[in-house]
Image (cartoon, rainbow, N blue to C red):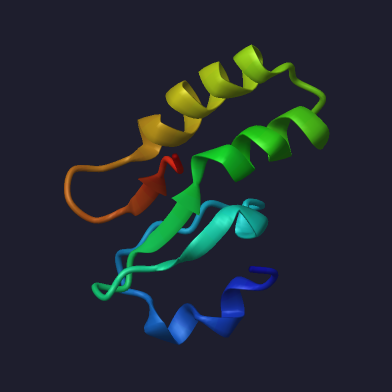
Length: 80
């Protein structure tokens, strides 16, 4: 995913778009909610922001997942 505008018309009005993390998007659900990759976010924060993996995981858990409202928002995908 490179540009959120390509799929914006398919998203729910209340879908939460995480600014600057377009490359971490896997896709969207049938309800129009964005699906983000936890692994890609780890890569992003370690490579772009210079954090180590533990710092990146802590930052994501607190600052990204902490944004999650009850109900709509985004889906975090934990790949196996």
